[in-house]
Image (cartoon, rainbow, N blue to C red):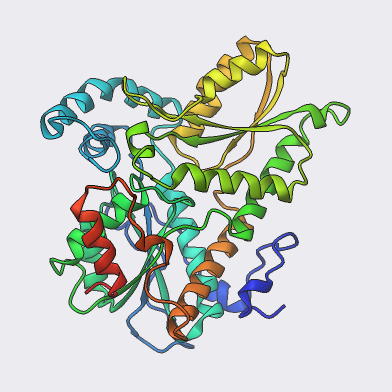
Length: 412
């Protein structure tokens, strides 16, 4: 297989075997709270020269508290984000909501092992992606992955300091939300823009953006393989009757109704996965993690499970379709809360694994980054996608428009 022809990757048979170069560059993942923004280790010697400024692959996500004690700050940052949860008098109300919810959410993080594993998995995915990317696109090597979380450590400020210390002059903002929403990827890009325009990342950094990839064949294959493994847990005689319940993080209807593309893009992901599975099972797309009394996208995952039980459909595979690694929404909401409710209704429920250490998924990340860098290098595309340039028809957020213009100019 030609490793440089990223469109030819055979994801169905891909095993994730590393070449000698991969094994040479791969470093153990460190989860130290003192050094957690960079995951690819020191700048590699040898094939790419000594001390060459790395191409930064900045992996964007909401994050989660790595320890229970970080829960309050995580919640406060989350509820202060008007892009995610629009609230009246937000600067006053958000800290109050965070303080009130902290004990309950701390207990949930305790129940899943004492914190969120999202940092560990994002670091691991980024490190292995960067190692493969060095081979796929050597002209921009060495590549170094960084994590920039929106609400938990490492926050964008800390990541900016690391890029600046490393002398980065070329950076790719790589969202780890497969489907675009102004509330998720948009919020992270707004934060990068605010820091970037102040020079926090250093002078003269050239930026580009991978803003969505919900139908990428490698991503679809990785999800489909995990679904097939979950389906195999049911008796073969009844396996085809199992309902695939795709569950994505919900959005407030105020966001959906201004023209946010998230619901459409999640639906496109589900359609692509079902096409890959050859529509072997019935399925539905449902929504989880609603917060507060306002209207959110539905129906809610828990209510869907109750409804299926009432209809006599007692075999279900829960599929996290908008998350790339385990965190509280999978480990607590799906595995503990919804699974317990399902058992109470006499249901047999299995959850498709999250992508976590999937070699197929990690190869897909590397292929996406390689194709992106190649297209920019050859002039096939600009720093941002055509779709990213389009604001929601109901958008009134001036920062959103400024951010899109800034990234379209390469961060200038």
